[in-house]
Image 1 (tube, one colour):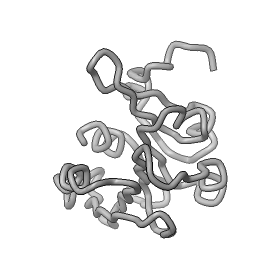
Image 2: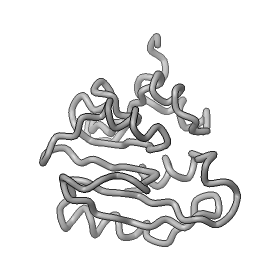
Image 3: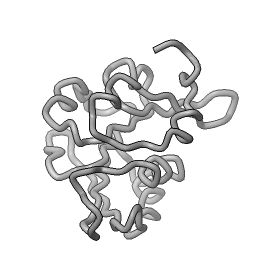
Length: 145
């Protein structure tokens, strides 16, 4: 999950500060294979913050999470209320319409390549500091907002 690690690496959470507090990456609707792939991120550092993984059950709260990766399928999660309840939670998903449904970053496969689009409006409302260079790579970076 190199893409997800890069999103984390190029994002700053003001509430984490500059100390070494952990950054919690929570996973939803993931199977064993995907969980194994994400395990490579456990303990890696992003801006001095060690990354800790948490696999969530469909009904489990995202309280304490900094990043929420939602895999397509499984229990649907209403993203707008989640974003309003936890504005400091960066949401990443691979479902169709993830960004249109209120998610921050949506992964898409196009022509055999993994790409992404972003919800510029919701990112602007949050206090994330995301690299402009990363945002320029989004599929929808050149479309009117």
